Length: 177
Figure 1 (cartoon, rainbow, N blue to C red):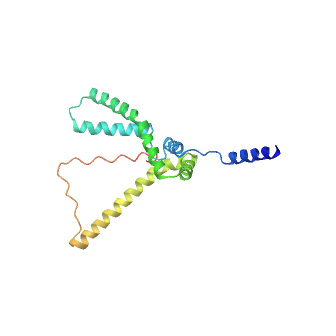
Figure 2 (cartoon, rainbow, N blue to C red):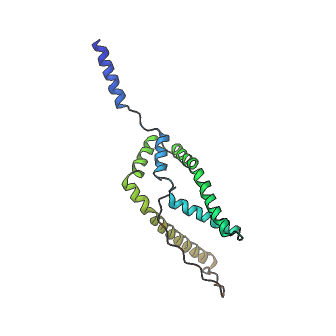
């Protein structure tokens, strides 16, 4: 009898020590919900809807303001209807790429206050990095053209009476994609 009680106690202690961890699927879903892969929040949705509407308007210049308003609402409704499937796909991609321990480590980061701070601050760093990479690439191409062709490439001359290009909008910080 005493032996059975001891065996049961050992078994229960072992089970408690081996409590199940979150499944890879659940962790991946939490990462997606914490916007650890893509920012799927309201600001991003507004931006996506606006750019899609602008694309349609460029392809269909005869669109009326009333049609544009209806189209904007329809685009938003259709995107919102597909977001759950997209989130499930993204979680699946995470599950295919990482094991449970890696997912847990990543979630601990993206789900933390520090992770939120970094997600908010990284877009301007990414923008500056892309600009620096573009500048470096352009300089490397110019140098190569000079080395091979003997002259530096020339920029196209501005067209007379051409409208000046509109200034680029400043980058809006968003969470990382």
